[in-house]
Amino acid sequence: MFGKKKVVPEKVHQSRWNIYSSNGTLKDNVNGVKFDLESLYGAFESGNLSLWTDEQYLTTLKVSEAEFRLLVKRDGLNNCNDHQPLELLQVFTARNGTEFFFEGGELCILRHAIHTDSLKLIEEEEFLKIRQGDKTLASFDTAQAADLKQDFEISFPLRDAA
Image 1: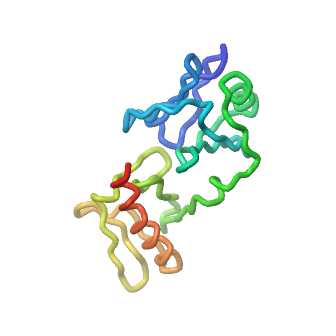
Image 2 (image 1 turned 90 degrees about the vertical axis):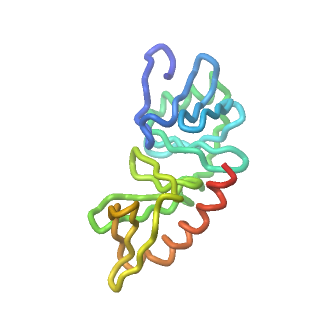
């Protein structure tokens, strides 16, 4: 929540991240981890607030510029004009138009995160499929296959470290 308006920002992971202005923290509801806003870096660009620590990208939230300024002024969020976390996050677009990206050890789609240990990459002649059990979650053109496989492999040690 931000200020007196109690605005709840639209989140990439709707139920995963919450900002508590009362004590100046960001909470990861999935892992139960709290981050002091004073220890985080934030870059605001076109309604998107990207948050990260010294070591890792955390999340991107949809907020207004006024809400972002409140977080910086009142809660001590470190304003960073370097938008690298937004640019470094590679987005893979499936054949049906769904956008996927890796965040740590999870494959993410808009408001859901799926642990990569439950996923398999299946290469076929014309595309690469991501499967969970017997269900195909997405298919990608071969042009994205090399980068997708690389990010998939990188996600395993990140998942284990988390």
